[in-house]
Length: 263
Image (spheres, one colour):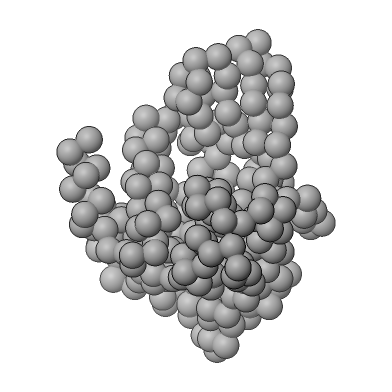
């Protein structure tokens, strides 16, 4: 607990990002990985494989970008750093521990960015029922002439999570408005991936599975707000929170899709 508290204060972020809970969320994910590493390994292995399959499609090897690369458990850093002249890990928060672990790769860089372009605006209007929620219009790296490969890694379904939770706590906007905002974040990110230069890969969880002790799926929850990817890819289950990580009676797994060639 003390180590996590120290990491919290050593992790840089804006007032909006900290207020909306991104920093403790990132630190919490890293702590869960430490507890569940053996259960996550198959998912992480398959994620890395899809990233490398996508990277192999790049016509040139100048710059590779990983969207959602803050923690990089699921990113083949060593291989990418050898394949490309420059690798950029993009995330809204880069924890102190994660930044320290990548220091030995001289061509691996970190970029702190809100990929949705909505977080600061959302923070300003979240408590004001007279103000509409922002529209996501991602622009990061769209005009980068050296970008040869991008991977969106276990990020898509997470884009609405913290904003939606924060909006619900403020109680200023209707459930319908919050859902519409969340769905638009998903749609905007998918459109953004299609507009990026170079090769693009997408790895995302699409469904939450609640599984009982007999292995029966007792609940399925769509994580993409009814968006259908409509692209060919491989599928697998991520054993995200096995008993008793979250619940003593149920496992919580994710169905994941990996698409090496989004475009």
